[in-house]
Amino acid sequence: MCAEMLSQKVRECGIGYGMNIYSGPELFSIITGVAPENFPQDVEEIFANPMSINGIGRKLAMKIHAVKELAKRTYQKPNTEIKIVNGPEDAAHFAMPYFKGETVEHFAVMLLNTKNHIIGFRDVSVGSLSASIVHPREVFRIAVVDATAAIILVHNHPSGDPTPSKEDVGITEHLVKCGKTMDIPVLDHIVIGDGRFISMKEKGLGGF
Image (cartoon, rainbow, N blue to C red; front, side, top):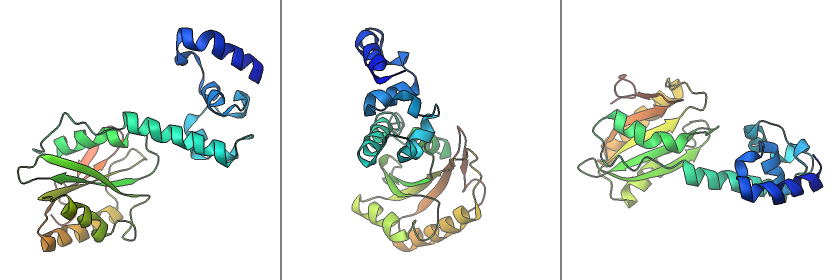
């Protein structure tokens, strides 16, 4: 479909019938002005490397990344219906919406008061877990600033399999030790997969 035909479709159909009439490539064409045939059908492929698409430069790539971030902020919010953590299920179900659709690992900290009410949920790092990017200084700085009584570590596995890796176990053991020193106990480490989760404490992993 040429740009002129797409423009006509937008004028004649978009307002009256809703944006769900458009394919993924057509929606990206509306956003960028680039012909829809330049876009692959896989939306994740577009978000992953927009500048590989013919006609997309740095400025248009920024628009595409901005759209993704807006969608994330709109739909990937923690489940605020859960106010208190009585067990790993509560922590996991609170956090799962946040990680929905993520293609990279995010490491976050759930902040609790003395009665295990959730008082915050903060992203600490993005990328594959390693000691270099999940540093105790960053984790416990957040906890201290928010006057936190205890924390729960949470991160996702984009593969969908929540089985903890050796790196997950090692980092958890280190943070649990630091928590004891700081008198801010780490209560659990929840690994989120595709609609599934694993509590490392329940599995006897991580030095709890």
